Amino acid sequence: MRITGRGLFVDAFAGGGGASQGIYEATGHHVDVAINHDESAIVLHQANHPKTHHYLQSVYDVNPLKLVTDEKGNFNNFINVLWASPDCRHHSNASGKAINRSEEIRGLAWSVIPYAALPEVVRPRIIFLENVVEFMSWGPLDENGKPIKEKAGVNFHSFIKALNSLGYKVEWKVLVAADYGVATTRERFFLVARCDGQPICWPQKTHAPLGSISVKNGLMKPYKAAGEIIDWKLACTPIEGRKKPLATNTLNRIANGIKKFIINDEPFYVPGSNRSQAAFIITYYTETRENEVRGLHLNKPLATITAKGNRFGLVTVDLVETNFKDTFSTLPDSYGLKEIDGKIYAVMNPKLRILAPKELFNAHGFPKDYVINGNLTLKQLASKGIDEHVFVKEKIEEIKARRSSKNKSFSEHENFMQLDLFSAGLFESDEFSDIKVFHSYSKKEQIARVGNSVPPKMAQVLVEANLPEYCSKVEREMSFLGGVM
Image 1 (tube, rainbow, N blue to C red):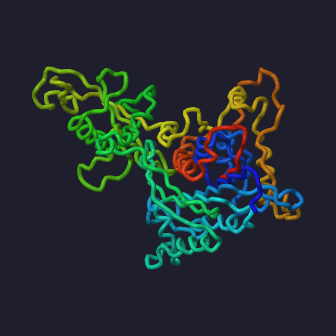
Image 2 (cartoon, helix red, strand yellow):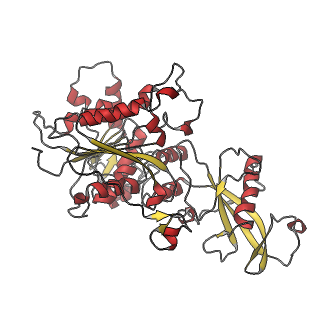
Image 3 (tube, rainbow, N blue to C red):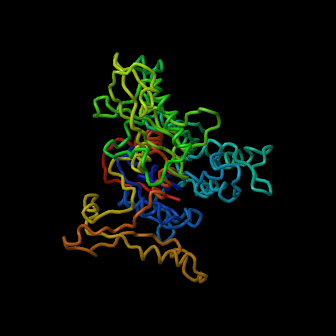
């Protein structure tokens, strides 16, 4: 007989907090516990999920039995959901051919098996696992750290058999975030395993490409466009006259993009410009063919966002009405001529800026107020319901020291010590209300967080499809357990 109660939600490996956010969007409740060996991920998660308890540890160091037992070792809860997004770098083809892949990192998915192997009354009712599509080809490596082609998929199927042997029914699919209203074409592998006898359910697609038959017939909504996630208040910089001149490849991408997305296509007009400005996206990937255009129209979703760096640049151009009707060579400063509603416009003054990290989080569907820079003032904390609390970095240092200490005399319970990132009452006076209590993230760190994150909508629709009874948005004070690796 399963222990009664709401059960716990464990979200393992969610470094960007996307799965935890998706669970919150689906159920209306913050996850209870987050586990992560990375201090930066914990800080970011804490900033956005203040009601969650955090563990600054590897998921391998956390004994899942501790989550479901009291101090006397008696079962006092069960795990309702385990969400796992193991490190994808050593599976992904995007990591490049030169990378020496690690069996240990590739095998992080095995960390969910101890949860599945818990006694039947407390083990996860349902397991979600997310990774890159190449996860399905998970197999052994040769002595040079390269996948053995002949054994592709061997480890993956062994993993599935392990779950089956523990009584789990397992299904998996490749889902595209754009199909569910997310402004990116991010494609990911999703696995669902459950042992409660209920059917595995997959969410129905709600969006399709603009111009598709399903959109024209009103059966689906059009894909969310990249133009919707841009902060148009952020100014672009002219491509000429910069202290550091743009690279030749970048200039070529801009020129080719103007030809493809402005002159030869219906332009995307900058909102509020009264059609006096148009814009498009260039992407920083190496061209493989002459005159290839590495970019995209702003009426389409953004391409996959990676953790390796910001590869998206916003280009704006001025559209200046002109009487010239000859070739654009008669206008030395023009990049071409465009006819719009019977009038001729010169394409002038291209400007460029790299997309801001916040825009990338927008593309993944994070809330507008999602904290990404690690900085909060006490006033902002108060708005999140945690007034007069402050981040305690010393607690992190204490746990890190314990974890690396050669003295292993402290008990297992201490090794599993909970990381309480907030200490009440340190600042009670209003004069301290604007003090920043978190550490700043660099843009590189912010991009890494979003590149590693699950778009919250994907977790939301999967939870809603498989656990509708938890998604009524009532009793919002009921909390769940989640985890981060």
